[in-house]
Structures are given as structure tokens and as C-alpha cells.
Amino acid sequence: MGMGPTSVDMQGWRDVWWQSPQQVADRVVADLGAVPQALPALVTLLGQALQARGWRVATAESCTGGGIAAALTAVAGSSAWVEGGYVTYSNAAKTTLLGVPDALLQARGAVSLPVVQAMALGACRGLQTECSVAVSGVAGPGGGSAEKPVGTVCLAWSALPLAGRAQALRLQFPGDRDAVRLGTIWCGLLGLLALTETNSHAFSGPD
Image (cartoon, helix red, strand yellow):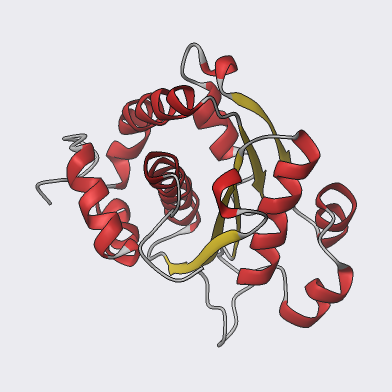
């Protein structure tokens, strides 16, 4: 792949992410075995960017079950920029802990852009942080549908400059449950890095 996680070419990953987040989803799964070793490099860059802005981050996770928070806190010194996180696996938890309206969950489903946007905003609000990342998806092997097949993941990011909004996208991850979860962790963190560095966008698409 040439620019896979093994090489930890973070500028290359930034460039591809900005051009096409779906390409990142495809490529990271193709080199999945290297992701755990590459995560510290990504998180270290993210931590530096967060500290430069004076931001603290909150996480709101469903399909990754706390994996993003675990990756963040695996790096020494992360207490300087990680505030905390939520694992909201059920719809009830999303409503109770993050304030996601039950009507929204019923109308759009847990794996949808409006729901992850509400999760991201709820995490920022609940932990009073400057930024957040939220994910919800169908990791498999069951639970997929024609509209939302296994591997479908919605991600959202929020930050103070977005003025109460969250930017969200939907990705399709190939592979098994582990691939979907690890790929989601990587992309969630990469989008957060992009948002922190640009101070405006987690990816080059519409809000």
C-alpha cells in the first residue's frame, strides 16, 4: 500500500483523508494488522494539536465500545487533553447519557448522521469540552440490512468553532467485526486530527 499504517506516513494519511475518507476506510482495513502499532503516532500528533489549541476532547462511542477512548488514553500524558468518554451501546443509553432524542432514534435509527451528530454534541455538552468525536455503526457479523449493511459506520465531530454544530459522514468498512471496529477507531481519530488542525472541518465535505 505504500502509505499504510506500517509506515506511519501521517502526512500521506492526512492528504488521502482530505481527498476521500472512504479511501482511508478501504486502505486502513487492507493493512489492518499494523493499525495497533500505528495508533500511538496518530494519537501523539492529535494530542499535540489539541494542546496547541488548549482543547480537551470527549468521546461518544457505540460500535467501538470505548476503543477510541482507549487509544487516546494509551499515550502517556493524555490526561492533559482527554476529558472523558461515553460508551452508549443501547438507544436508551444514547438518550439518557447524551440527550439524543428518542424520536430521532426511532425515525432515523442509531446508525445515522443525525444521531451521531447529536451524540457528538451531547458529549461536548455533558463533559464541557471544546471538541468531541462520536461513532455508531453495524460492526457485524449480524445486524445489517439492505439500507445499512454490515460495515456501515456513521462518524461525527464537533468543536467550538462549529458553533453548536457537528460535521458527520457515513463510511463503509470492508472486512469482519474487528476490521470495522479498528477502522472506525482510526478514522474517528484522523477526522478529529483534521478538525483540530484546521479549526473548522473534520473532512472536506458539507456539514
